[in-house]
Image 1: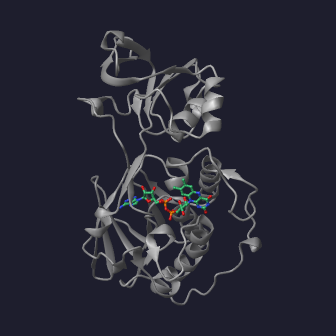
Image 2: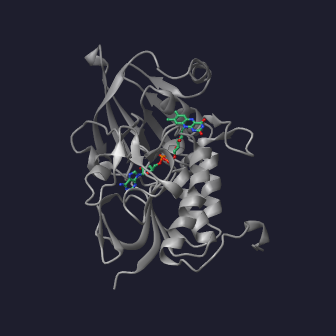
Image 3: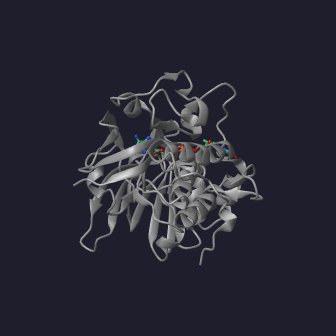
Length: 331
Ligand SMILES: Cc1cc2nc3c(=O)[nH]c(=O)nc-3n(C[C@H](O)[C@H](O)[C@H](O)COP(=O)(O)OP(=O)(O)OC[C@H]3O[C@@H](n4cnc5c(N)ncnc54)[C@H](O)[C@@H]3O)c2cc1C
């Protein structure tokens, strides 16, 4: 029999992660669902190495470190986490929500909290034939821990901030780091480009990836075409190819749910405690819309406990609380 969660949180960005932690702190059965293979939302996918200065109590924290800390915090209590899983439909039957995923799994929930930001993220993929068959086996679009590439030969593709910053972050760990870009100039911050010029990262421009081949020893052969002088084509042998063309976020999936809540131009409309037009369905963080709403992490963090506590009142009105976490003793 499919188990029933008290609260399912859709979206593993900072706001969804904090909501999942807070729900587990309140001792309810909670699941967190994220479309990408890694939790972290915008801070990890879009600006992992930039510092954030307006999260209370943190004097400048990178997107990556914020997400790492949120993960550690979630680890204090039990949260069922499903990554690489997109919720493609939500229906309500007999006071329960049925959440359909793009995988085999279906989840049942008493209440649902949307923390879906601006939509589910999809990396912009390498446009070459059969690229998908190398995904997860040498080709990736995402990296959260540069240390995992110790002693590997790594090539990064892309010309923006994320490609340049990732190359610089990986270089101290990797055996060799290449950065491939189809133009001569990078679109990244001037300071990062300057740092790149003085780093051991080998820059390959103006070149584009036109083919991939698996070699007998398991490494990946990357065929590069010079965009101006075709005779300068070359073959690079790497352990990992990481494509950084950015992410596309699209909320079409959410709009197609059977119980798609009311929305305006800016997001899902919410009332008190961030409940949507659908009782039992809440929306927190960037996804919601109300007068004066601002897309800030601190604001979403504040909304999370309010929505979780209101969700608990839906299925357990006599529970009381919330208390203060400072009365807990956690080993
Ligand atoms: C470049 C940049 C810099 C920024 N700097 C700051 C800053 O300095 N300070 C600040 O406070 N804010 C900053 N922000 C804004 C901040 O990142 C957002 O306010 C914050 O990420 C919102 O968090 P969230 O959890 O609501 O949504 P998101 O971070 O967008 O996370 C939503 C998650 O939900 C997932 N998802 C969506 N739909 C589904 C689905 N159907 N099924 C499964 N998963 C789904 C997505 O894949 C995504 O991971 C910045 C944003 C950008 C782009």
